[in-house]
Length: 445
Image 1 (tube, rainbow, N blue to C red):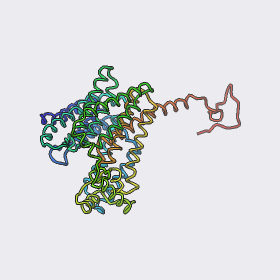
Image 2: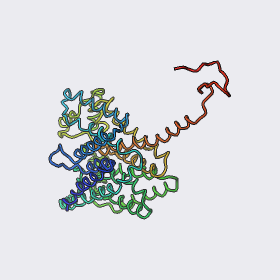
Image 3: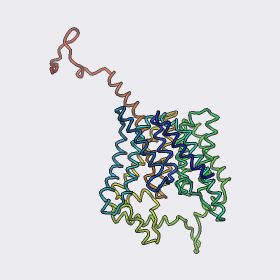
């Protein structure tokens, strides 16, 4: 059964590839779908995501050569990624970096380039919705199948790793797919819209329960509430969506399995002296080490492998810093590392501005991207993941939606300037009937 479920991503890959031969937008979904199930094909070097990235880039390259058009990615996003990549190249030897550390920024740059070719407006996100629904339900099926074996261990807290091989990542990135399906769902009839909406919400709740992720629980809850507020047009619709979210939360809490409840309640406990403590899996100790390392080299950083070595020496275990934003500063230094967070906040501001000033499909699409970015903002604060494809794909979509939102405004302004009557001094001077000399001679070329 599990083997059959693992074949679904390959079927999706083939489906998107065939569709991409005639419609280049599907090459974009090829990358997003493949990154949802990053199981290895032959080794850790070749993953479905990397294969899809090469296929999509080849497809867009051929189209660019035949049509002579290649859309440039957003300059702000590109500048931040290139600065990050440059810093890693400069310290490749000095900080004993490996070439693998260059993969993240390069992948981010390529995905943003792909987004700029595929996403021109909110309408471009609609055709992918049904595939994203399938991917979300497949992720649920995989964790359910896995949990049926894990639960036999007899532990009070059981967790399914999910398609990503990590419980936290599987919960968050499956939710990313579900949220990005909303533009398609919003275009369906009322019956189908509510049916699929409830189905996806139930799948996300099930994935959270089976992966037992505390960080994903908080991140998804906040993102879901913000999605209900931002996506709704008008206070009545907003009240209904927020109320529906509250009912879903209440029902989920009532149906939560014992293993999930034990893990959530186990976060807060008391020590031998009766003092309340938080079980954070050494995150507090890791953050203290990270803050100290940041003050030791605030400008140039320590490089990407330094933290694991320090943690192994001081804590006895070689682990990553469970705060992606702080880790970027520790590794790259404050000037470069802080850009990693600032560009994320800027993309959130873009999405929120588009959602606030739009209606209909454009509002729903912008709200979906905003909710995903908010979820990742919170999730990365307690997890080491960084430069994940779903992250910078959402950054690329946010930039493209903001471009599309500004384009009609700028076009209207240009048209108004062209049709507005010019002031007398700016008019070209013609001599003849109905004119008089102003004392200014026309320029002769």
